[in-house]
Length: 208
Image (tube, rainbow, N blue to C red):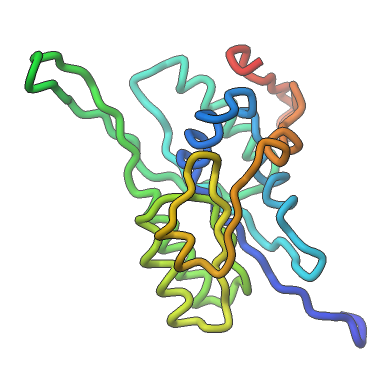
């Protein structure tokens, strides 16, 4: 570092993939082809530097069209060099006691735990000065509170996906905002991109 150069705050961005996806698509269905690294970079201020982007998700199952679209999207994300951390996606039977109708209910498991562990481990390893969390999940209140309690020099800032604002999360964060459509639209992948292996990846037709 040059003499007199101001030291920048290191930022790691933690993205709750399903919370972001369902929040943004409930409000803006045309922004699914989202480059989350580009989105993360858009939040970085002049006195900060982005040192990591961690994307938390689970692989969907029991629905071939969704599996195909997700594979394409995860390949696109992987081409940007971000870290993808997987939980579990479980399908279990559900039924209505009134009418007797039965169906399969899909649930994502472990994402909130994975985010919490990652945020705390990175704090202990001094990997960031600012943890930037993209989620509105109230299950993440305890790890946010713990980071601030155990590491007073570190800050957790929260960006809420559309329709995912949560006061319990906002109240423990040291800064918050709601992600608007303009940022999501500005961070879209191109219609096609070339992966490291030379494969030409196209945006899923259903997302056109």
